[in-house]
Each structure stands twice: as C-alpha cells, then as structure tokens.
Image (cartoon, rainbow, N blue to C red; front, side, top):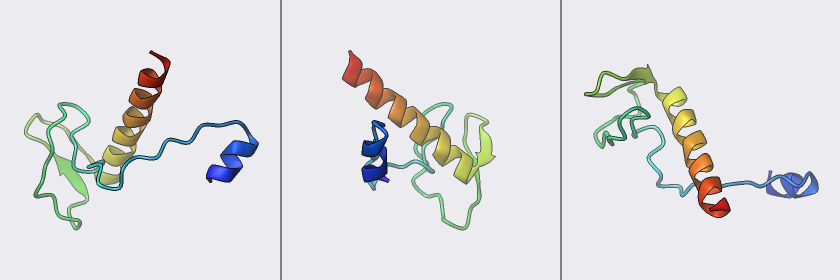
Length: 73
C-alpha cells in the first residue's frame, strides 16, 4: 500500500500496532481494557453501543485526522 500511495502522491499514516482502536470509545475516549476478542459489540459506560469493527474504523479515522492536523500546524 505504501509504494502505491507514493505513485499517486498520497500520504499513508500508520498507527502504532498497540493503538487501542477497538477498545477506545469514540464518544468519550475511555479505554475498555477488558474487552475480549469474542465481544463484537462495544458497550461503554457513557451509553455508546457500536459494532467493534466500526468503532475501530472511527478511531483510526480520527487518529489519522489528528496526525494530519499536527503536521499542518
């Protein structure tokens, strides 16, 4: 993916492998450390209930946006 992005002048942002994308609440930011892989629905104390994979995608999107904001500022 990285070399193809270079061909098209697209920046790739890689999150650290330990970034808690599926354990981090996209609403309040709380990390649910005891979330098992078998739990497919993320439920937070703040009331957020969301598919675990969608949760991870939202958090990775925000992570990328934050990295870009810091590089521009």
